[in-house]
Every structure is written in structure tokens, then in C-alpha cells.
Image 1 (cartoon, helix red, strand yellow):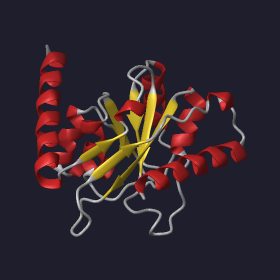
Image 2 (cartoon, helix red, strand yellow):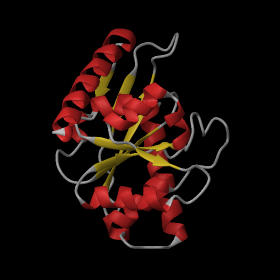
Image 3 (tube, helix red, strand yellow):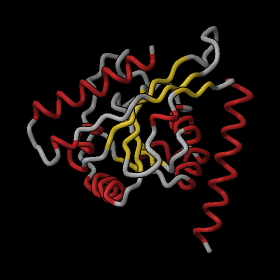
Image 4 (cartoon, rainbow, N blue to C red):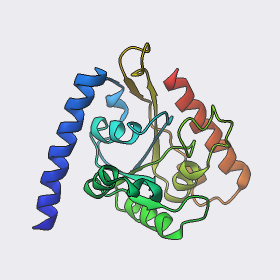
Length: 198
């Protein structure tokens, strides 16, 4: 019963947020045909503001679990969204084994997760090193990566646009622990995201 109630709440919240994006940001969605309808996926995009996670969740047409830093749960509204959409809380600046195991389990079950390689909002602009989490999960699980670029929506930038690129397949590296391969995959994913967000 609880599961049914949660699904209803999720459906209502997703619809409300989508309408809000349409009215306030006049969102434009490009590349939905690039998103496989079945199988495990890892969504990742550029991170500009707090609206990025819900933007991906309500437009991708797949159930997605975001890896979200624990601090966000101090905000009651964000904590509610995290509960509704079953976000995976992550402890920052340390190897959170629980979050890693949960994410890999979800991917093994054919589900979708999402995270931002920048690690924080506007990470690239701040000169921070791109995190290798997406590449790690892709190589460890064999799941395809769906890069997406977010642009516009701010004052003077026009409508908010999210573009989903073609899925990237790194299954040939599955199980590899080679640091060079991890860096190569991370850089390639980030290059795709930057291209889609320009």
C-alpha cells in the first residue's frame, strides 16, 4: 500500500514540477529519442543550479534515482523530493560505500541513476577537478551513459533547454581498474556534456 501511495505522490509531484518548468522557464526538450526505454542507464549533465536534478527527473521519461549530497536533506522541500524520488544520499569528500553499493544494485536491476561529474554547481567554472563517479559506475556495471546539456533559463538567456545526447557505451572496459581508462572515460563523458550544453 505504501508503495502505491508513493507512486501516486511521485506522479503528482512530477506533473506539478513539469508544469512549473513549462510556465516559468518555457522548457524545450531535445533528444528524447536518444534515451533507451529499457535497461540500466546513468544520466549525467552540467550542473548550474538547484533545478538541474528535478529538470532531468521530470523530462527523461525514465524513473531516475539521483545521487545527492547529504547536506541537501537539511532543506525540507529538497528532503521531500529526495524521499519521493528515492534519491541516494551521499557523504561528500569521502568514499561512501553504502551509496556505491546501492547505486550498483539499482543498475544491476535495470534501473537508472543520475549524478553530476562536476560534483558541485558550476564546478568547471570554479576550476574544480571533474569527478570520476560516472565513469566508475559505467565501467563497474556496464550500464550506458546518457549525457545531457542544460542551457538558458536565466535572465537574458532565453528559454531553458535540456538536450539528451546519444548513449555512450563503455561495456568493453567493464571490470577494468585501470586509472588511465577511468580518466579517459571521465574526460570523454565531460566533453560530450560540454558539447551538448553550448
